[in-house]
Image (tube, rainbow, N blue to C red; front, side, top):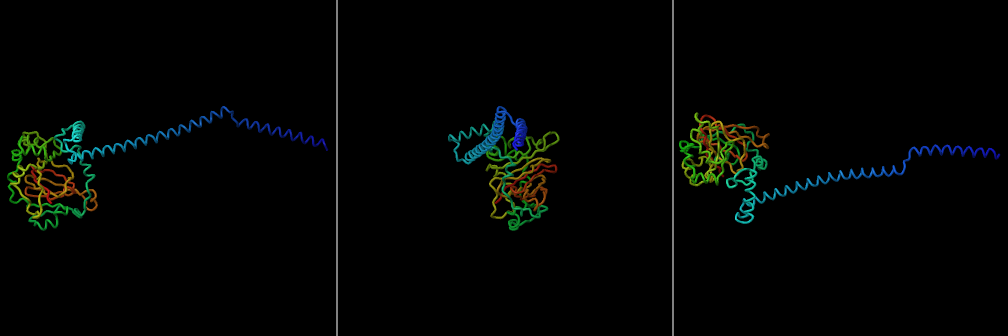
Length: 364
């Protein structure tokens, strides 16, 4: 009985040894030494640090950009507030802050814009695109179902007040200048005599009034009246390009002289008053005002004293589906257009072969 047991133990031992040898060989195939393990761990740590560093760098860059944008907005807002305070005479010009403001404004205007500060109306020009962007919304009833501009004659003040005066709906009145001597009096030469070099009228217009050169090379009203009549009327012997300008007449003496030749349109209500400042628009055939919208509070009337001019009125974008597309109307001498230029986009073009002269004003 003992021998078989001995044989069994030997067989078991041999089997165990064989299996252990196979296991040892397998372990040897899979295991790595200590040095290799440390190298692997180090590489893993470096990889993690690299990933964390990249994420941290991105986060830091984004934080810096956010801080810079925020600081820029604060600085710009502060400058605009500062300019607004000075413009509103909250900060006296003779004070220390006033002198700092003047110096800073002079540097910005003359270095960045290339203009003379003392001849500019605004410290920082407010582009028309921004004016259009921030204009108040309008009531689209002003153009609802309109396909053309109403043309009227012999219009009573009562009907005008009820239907047109404050509705925003444009109107063309063909008999609005009966009895006006402006039709015979106003001309380029007539205005040239009023706005002579060195005159109070011209100095006031250039220093205190608004001037719109539109797309011409004129920088001030005096430049317009430096033209000869041949140049102004584009006569054959002159090479002058077509031109068109507008200006506000804020000199009281000149205003009184001009108002001898025109008066408030007959259809305006008794309790309606025109603005203290009138507007004059003048130009040659082939030119006019590009499409724009005004920054005014009141509707206005504009009388076509000389020449012929096409008005194109376009509803604001928010009224496109209610009101449709643009409308044209041609004004001839004796016609008046009533339009809220703060709501309607508008452009003009002088047509025919005569110089166009228009006089206008806002009304309340």
